[in-house]
Image (tube, rainbow, N blue to C red; front, top):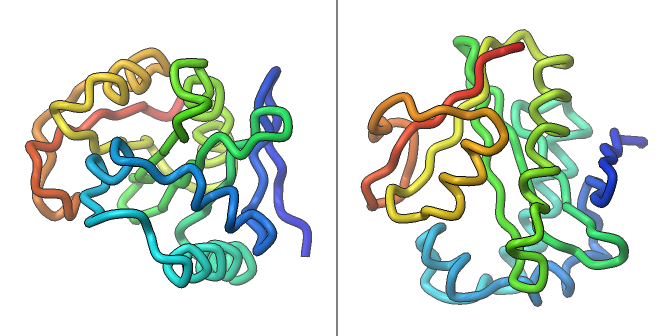
Length: 170
């Protein structure tokens, strides 16, 4: 099966494969664990399950689509978008330590939101971001998202004070 590859000037977004598991695990760090409230590095079986679920969602036209973000030959992180119905698609992204502060997410987010607006009947993309995650908030704003309100608890599982950023359909 062939899935969309999204390309920007410096990044390439591709569906994860089993061959990417070690590189994905190497990107796990304390900052990522903090924002996703993980108790520590993800066990290998969790990463394998993530890859399997991601590929299955693509194969079955599921509601969530995930891409690995590649910066040249380095797995720089991941980005996904989930169509939750009612016109909203929720975006999430993580950038691994060697690729942070290089505008990798800033280049990747418009690729994914453009794909979603073109593919799904959605009216807006939504990013739920921890109030203390200033880097992620700045990235969202830089890519056209604007702060809307405090996130509703039904929109997230994290325990921090979460904020809702939205990007309307162009």
